[in-house]
Length: 250
Image 1 (cartoon, rainbow, N blue to C red):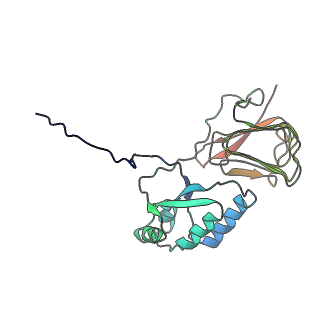
Image 2: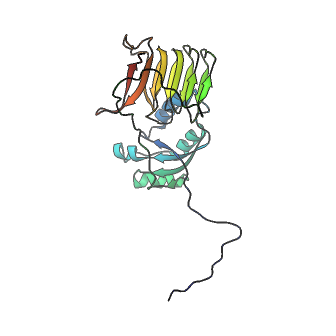
């Protein structure tokens, strides 16, 4: 016969399961000088991109390419903290690399899942006009952006209702809508959202990027795109993700 036993819970604490959202750094090189250079190029002019975000160091790419590589984990962690990241855990890597990571204070997290960038599926036809952003949560900028100015819409879409001049930079974790000429840099899906898009009434950018895939003005845009109403989206293909630009026709 079943027996019921009386139980008691501690008065001062409880222990429960919890999920913590992490940023993942997929490390592809053990050369910290190269890593530092690339971090500076990507985030050096965006000092508030990270905000003490917990970080998982994923050594899987390094394990595949160079399993014997030796990493200076204390130096790596100091480098990452300089960008307002909080390295907490590690996954992948060789036994020696994992041991070095743990010695530096990282917690092994072999079961952690890292999201893959998912590009948008091909659309059956171009949209007729720039898609309207969700009114709730979007950051709206009404003034022209001059050279040296930067706007970052953290965790939401960005709508700019005036010109983005050369040397200016607009960044969003979601979509970017520019209802004016886009002549500076536009970075959508800044934290890896491959579904993000860029819309502009006059596409003349120095740089456009979605989820880390970018194109600069060094590669001239085709005549049917340059200076025209355009949307930019990310499409997955057999050779990797690529940016697709489509004119917006009324």
